[in-house]
Length: 287
Ligand code: SF4
Ligand SMILES: [Zn+2]
Ligand SMILES: [Zn+2]
Image 1 (cartoon, rainbow, N blue to C red):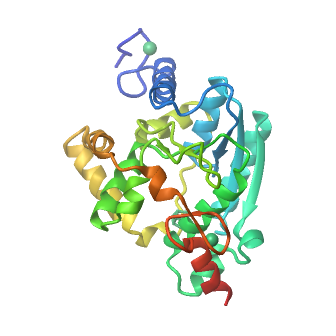
Image 2 (cartoon, protein in one colour; image 1 turned 180 degrees about the vertical axis):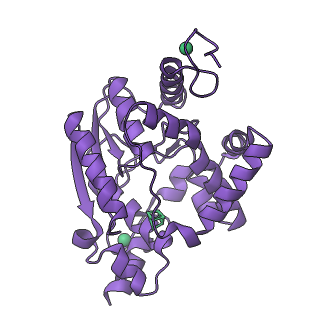
């Protein structure tokens, strides 16, 4: 089959390599502009894992001429994270991107694999500490850009609905937090309207990664169940994921700044409660 815009062979969505790459990059730039995520003067740090989404995000932002740095969290998941961090280091060296790696072991006292042995649920504790470290080490930047794509967002909307998690629900969207907040670097998601499959094809076409490994802890997670269910729906009813995120954006009327404006009494970081989740877990695992 040929590309719908030229005579080249199509690779995905009836587009050739060149037109597909341009289609993704245009979509990302449109999201950045439409939601005012950042501009060329801003200092941007990208939360990078070495997976296809964060590598693609780093690649696209540098191609679009933004000033970027990379920040990676080493949770301490043997093999899986070691491999992805090696890929990330190679990418950053090749593309002249400044990279900082911070680890659970150094900052929390234990790698994730040890914390899990204490009976904690891997994805819950991993998410809490990762967000905590990303926030802590992104101070001084205007925004923290993450590689969340449309699949991630649609899954999060459904998960928060099913768990009646309103405080997390209000923090979703292409941008959360505000530049006026002292203890919180605003989070932005330039890949918000890019499907997981599109990012897979984009990263493959640009030679960013050809391995799509999964974390060994993902198998029992609630997210995995929601992901499979949404993939099934998307296959049967194309456009489902886009409808979910567009529905979410229409509903988002709650003031996020007010929800985020409290301070943890232990560490002084931004928190929705009196004590942040990171401090709650830190006490549990270090006692
Ligand atoms: S699957 Fe769970 S444990 Fe693994 S990196 Fe993701 S959040 Fe962390
Ligand atoms: Zn073409
Ligand atoms: Zn705290």
